Picture 1: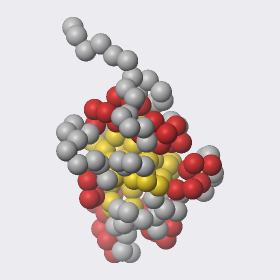
Picture 2 (picture 1 turned 30 degrees about the horizontal axis):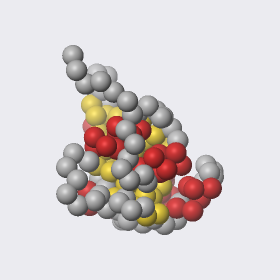
Picture 3 (picture 1 turned 45 degrees about the vertical axis):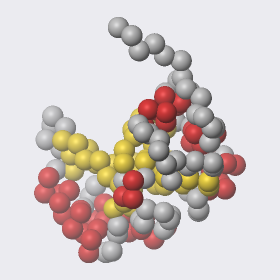
Length: 167
């Protein structure tokens, strides 16, 4: 896996904690599949013992499903799970794109609207492609700069991007 910075290297194989959040870099698989093939892929993952810890599936106008999947247990990177995922996709002739995403967990208690401060601190600093929830209430962020996202989200409080919410 390519190294993308010293901060990420420290947490690629384990969690990195700040005052409020725990961060982990995970591998996301993005691919297109029709309904039947997607169902077969999910069955095959079960068959080889792969845990899907986070997923988004969106039906496109073409009828294909756009799928974003993170595999493995929620709090741990297991290389074998990623290898098995690649093998299942290859077996079904599915081309995929892989990229690192940031898993965020251990939200501070009593913090309503957790997405607001997270997105509000990132959108003016980098491209935020996708935000989604996974197993055990862990948040997954597909952002253009993972080390910078970790630095921003480690601030207490999280510095917010300037905005005007009036019409």
